[in-house]
Length: 306
Image (cartoon, rainbow, N blue to C red; front, side, top):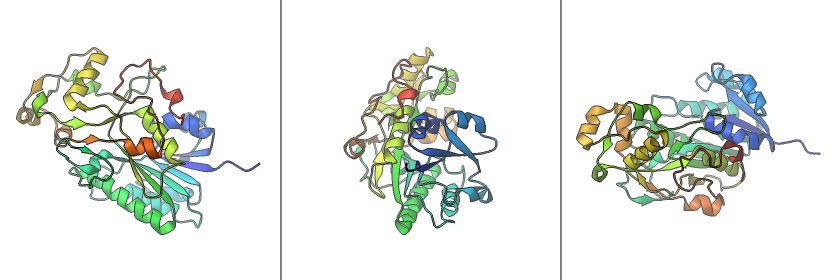
């Protein structure tokens, strides 16, 4: 009987945890875990073998060489700098052995498209990121594509927008702007608001699982739902779900003065991102095709289903 293929998960956070139960039935799963991150026993309970290492400490990544047939790269870039140093450290570690993975899936961001003035766009849209974090994501995409082409590794890029989720049946996994709403921070008047995309964390996890098998080398996919909301409308919906007051409305000029700079950048870009390629080529039917804040709907135990 042939042995199971080996899968390495890099970036062992919420989305990885939503996918790992399904993945562990099909792969021998290794999860790169920082010493100060989620306890190793938690990953063992989920069916994965933890591998201690830190993308910020390249000397700690020696065990990754030749370890896996496929790689799921979910780790974000570091917080500063023009380039994604973490991705470079990962690729250097994977390249130390003559045994390279056959496939690598990277979760990027729709932020690489920059501001599109509210226009509808797809994967053919030029990538012109505005924020420093999105420029680091673009650098990672370019670096991964070059590496994949040079080493004949199939690299697939998944571009995700804002990720959300309500609590699962165990009371965990919430990914909602609760603290912002509790602080009473404003949002723009509707006429001055921006369009933003969203994806449920379970559907992003399912897209990761699918991309480990489907999608051409170097191909990119927008992993977004079909909801067409402005940012303020999304915050209103979340406030209603959490039974909190809806955020006050104000002008964009006032908003810039009243929110932290890190949040202001989200109101500097507007785009409506299409997911046709995801449905056509990945054949992925979303569990949450529209924003859905009902915690009783399908949750993480279904997230790996293809």
